[in-house]
Image (cartoon, rainbow, N blue to C red; front, side, top):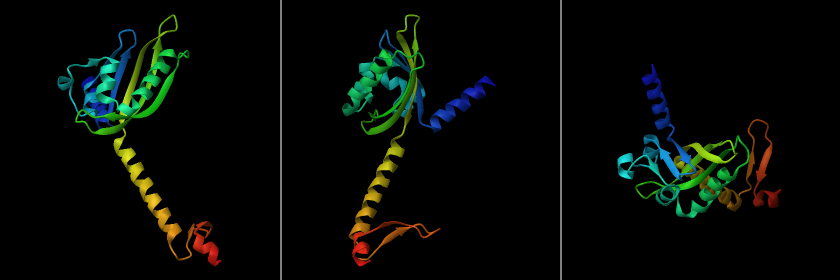
Amino acid sequence: EQKRLQKQLSNAMEIALLGHWEYDVANDLFTFNDHFYKMLRTTTKQVGGYTMSSSEYANRFVHPDDIIVVGEEIQKAIDATETNFRRKFQHRMIYADGTAGHISVQFFIVKDSQGRTIRTYGVNQDITDHKQMEEALRIEQERFSKAFRATPNPTTISRMADGTIIEVNETWVETF
């Protein structure tokens, strides 16, 4: 039963493009799993093991323009005074093959008896496809908006159900 449940979890993580990790603050050491490396299009063998320092991780897999943002997020977690500190953010990444992508990061912290952050546990999800779809939609909306404004015909956008006019172009305003 345990093996079956582990296989189900593994399949779910693969389908969702998830990889979990933990970070040992005192030793500046990330520990990743095979799913994490698969999400980054590499393997444990290619990377050289399941652990690496935060600077090695940042230099290998964080987009250079986002290294500062990721560093600030880590520092906020380490400095957090709340015991239930949780965080979610997104940043660009670099896959092992050199191409860029996007990930969503969610994590929580663990404090010691003196209130110091000693560990963080998290999960990253590859959201590159989602970001690409958002960008394609933005471009199409921009293209539609330009065409709507530029058409020489009086044009409206209205709701079919009740005929409510939502938007009109300049030609419509001039005509009516």
